[in-house]
Each structure stands twice: as C-alpha cells, then as structure tokens.
Image (cartoon, rainbow, N blue to C red; front, side):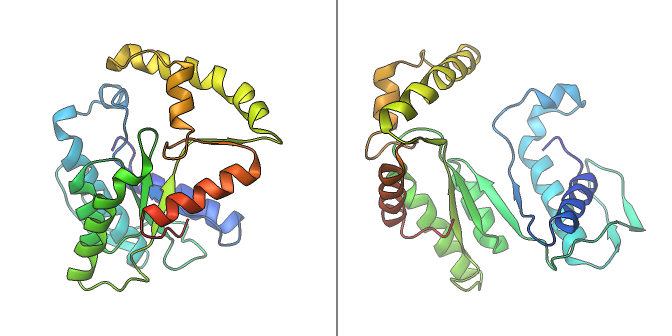
Length: 227
C-alpha cells in the first residue's frame, strides 16, 4: 500500500530478466502501518490505496509498454513507457491475503492466484475463506486452473525436531513479544509456541519428515494447495 506500482513492476521485471523468468510477485495490503506516515499516506485510505495501486500494476503488467491510467492517490499516466519488460508474459502475480473476507473475494473477482498468509492460529480455520475465494472466482468465469491457492507460514527445518525448536524459538519469541507490545498481544510463551507447532497450528517447525507430513495435512484441510 505504501509502494509505487511503477517502481515495484520495474524491480520485479528486472529480477525476472536476471533470473531468466523465475520471478513472481505476491501483492498484499500489508499488516504493518508504520510506512503510512513515513510516506505521507493516510491510514484511512488503507483499502482504497491498495485497490488503486493493484489496478495500476495489473494494467502495467497486462498492457504493452505504454500505459494510460488515472486515479486518486497517484499522478496520471498518459502513455509513458514502463521499462524494462519482464521475460515472462504475463509476470505471475499472486494476491497475498490475511483473514479479511473482502480480500479473498477481491482475488476471486480478479481471477488472481491466492497466497494466504497464516502466521498464527489453526490453519484449517481458513478453509471457509478459501472456499469463498474459489466460489467467487468460478462465478466470475475463471477456471479452477486459474484459481490456485498457496499458503505462506513461518517455518524452520533441522535434522531433529528438538534442534529446530532450540534454534527457532528464541528469536521467534523475542520478535512476537516485541510486536505484541505495540499491538496488545500477550507475551509469547513456550506453551503458546508448542501449540502453534502442533498438528493444527500454523508453524512448520521440526525435522523434514514431520514438516512434510504437516504440509500435506494442511493441504488436505484447505481443499488442496498448489504452493
């Protein structure tokens, strides 16, 4: 929401060229608000900023070099060229979402693949929102192949589960506790952490076999994920 779509597209197009067609974008509104006052943006415009910037970025992606566009939060483009162009055509764009139903509906209406950021709680509780996305996308005329679903969760893999826990927990607890001070969350405890890395929790922390089984279990619970 605080980044300029033209610059974001240029950066990822450059990355796509350097990587020979392996770049993908995940676009989301963002879960932190510190950038708004830094760039003179109003938090009240949180959703309209993202909607407008997403619209511009998709127009830059889907049109040839010269873009005609006008909006409220950014100067108009009157056919200026946006360079470089990526190797992939179109450059893959996923819509990153948290837990807001409107975000899932937006992705379905646009036919964009969905990347669900699950940083806490029980993964299976996101199933109704993913079903909402798929239903909305089908009603909007998109095929199941276009309505891909990916899941983004925090994870750490080590040779043994105990090693993974010992490595990962201290930094995770410190980070989540610091964020909690700002947002009113309780301090992260080992008991809370253990619940999050349990069978239904969002964290993917353990040995390779344990993490693989959990990813498969999450995929089935969410109706099949592709990433």
